[in-house]
Length: 544
Ligand code: ISL
Image (cartoon, rainbow, N blue to C red; front, top):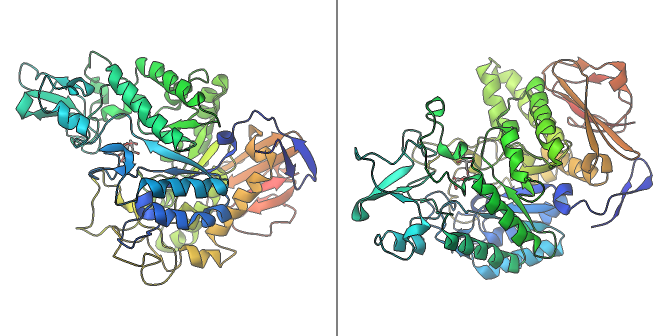
């Protein structure tokens, strides 16, 4: 990547430090392959479908793709139950399709990061099939087996994800022991205390690194270490799935060895860890001293309501936890596990009494302002496929729900055009389309310069040419209640961002009111002098 960048508005070259790695500057785009684009017309998205749409992502202006799992899988957890880590499920294509995708992406300067699921396999993985075949089997210790408690109950009180009444243990009749699964019974946890497991999972990393991937998104990676005593979770956290609580020192040793493996490869390979702990301070610890994960997802902002004070707290917490470690944050509004942010904010507003006519006005405006926030905070942003179209969750009619975690709504297929089938030309897609797909589709929005899609594109391109927004320092500024204000600066490049989280106009104090509008979330004139008045739900990027 270039060592210098042009700040167009400042009209001069500025030197950027050469040692800022690509993953600190990049904007990632999460592809959920089942729902992105269908190359073979079977109603399920695939690698060929994605490959054919790469130019659309280049046009948008993202830098890196994260692909959710495409490995061989019985699909109990839609690919997060892997039965062969080193092959592509036929539903998604072949290894040759994958190689072609990586080659095409790299030719377009798009990095490719893939999911790696180290905590558990499918119960149909040959390792587990062997482990379950008898207590003395070669792979028995690759999983976590325990004798029943004296009263015949599970070995401890850990609760599995998805069904909070279900224990994280399943009794295996044929061999008379319980096995551990932090997720579905069909997803037995690997036993990372067994050195052969660690070695095998390192081999998986090497397999894909040798194929040219730029890195990994490591699924629930904070869970690969367990307390060897498997102690009960405390009564005060009863009902919280153990995966959101598991936090033990041995994991950090394992992450350092993974980091060593990645650093041994040329080309700045990276790992973004899904550290599903709900405290920002706990998440920050997984960066180690720059020797564990390169990046980690930080979920409190994803769960934060659309309120200036709550976002301020998230930002303060992030600065406090990440700053001293010199750790680089990530920012995420939506992913494949949670209702989309547009839907979350709309639902919260409806609960607070927002009527339909107000919702019609504010829903898209909130999603637009959120885009400005996501793409101008200090850290690496992750865009979830479809948020660039302003999508809301699909309504899933009874009978079509398929996910054990109830997460189908945010996984609806992307509408590519307004024709019948929205670009999914073969079989009926595996899930229904999101609402208003006739309007909120790629083709309609590409043709409309005022669309959410064009806003994302303008933001991504502004970010790319503005060092302050990429590498710049970050300072929160005093602002009226309901408004978030911050300044980003890198050398002579400075930008002020103002986000109005309210449905009322807001007037900001004179200290914030100077400057020229680089970009406004509602597409108000992008070249005007800012007068200090924010429209309802408006976010602006100002240059001095
Ligand atoms: O999905 C959730 C809430 O509905 C989360 O608790 C989720 O289980 C957690 O973020 C871990 O997620 C990851 O691992 C799971 C998989 O189902 C998710 O899709 C994945 O992102 C198990 O592999």
